[in-house]
Image (tube, rainbow, N blue to C red; front, side):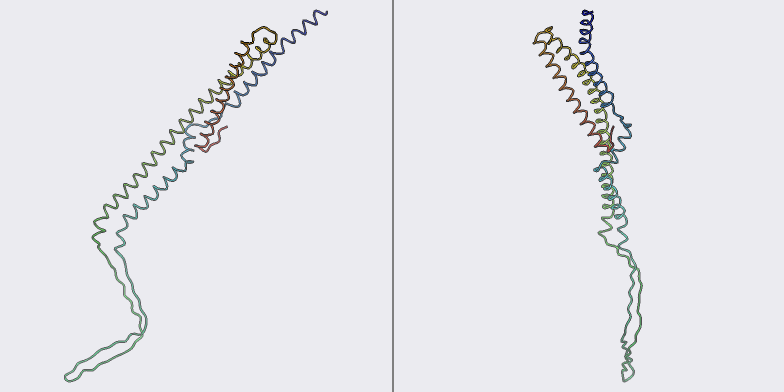
Length: 244
């Protein structure tokens, strides 16, 4: 009976490290399935959101509106040389007249209150405006096309940037999952090595080697996690969309 009890105790002691290893691996698997699995929106949705969210692009689009208004103003500039003028005046007016006869001159004067008005149409033809109108319109059109091309170029850059960081985030996510798996295996192995070292089954040099390897894998995991978080934050900042 005493031998059976000792055997049972020994079996329990042997099973304890494996229970700890299972718990550790289970935690790593939970991290992989929850912390790194993102619900990424469709790439086109991210691109469209980035185009709307980008401040510089919105500024360039406002420049297009300004250039369009300037072109319209250049085309209508000739109308400043054409117009209608009207003048009115009300008050007391003195009228003088003289009549000459054979031997005498008769001078007459009168004072009346009346309303005077006149309406007229005028057209000026400045030679300078005529010569430079075509050149001004051509320049305004060129400035408008430049603004449109700049907007298109900026849109292409934004699309490329979103695609690049989208793919970078997917890569960082896969690498983080790989590092998490390696870390789980390394910690499980380290626990086994610690147990064997305490029991005198392996030399201290092997224990130190496994410890250094585990520390290196842990550092690689932390580095991968940091890069994953940075990539996620950058993509969120570009698109204005929170990624969960």
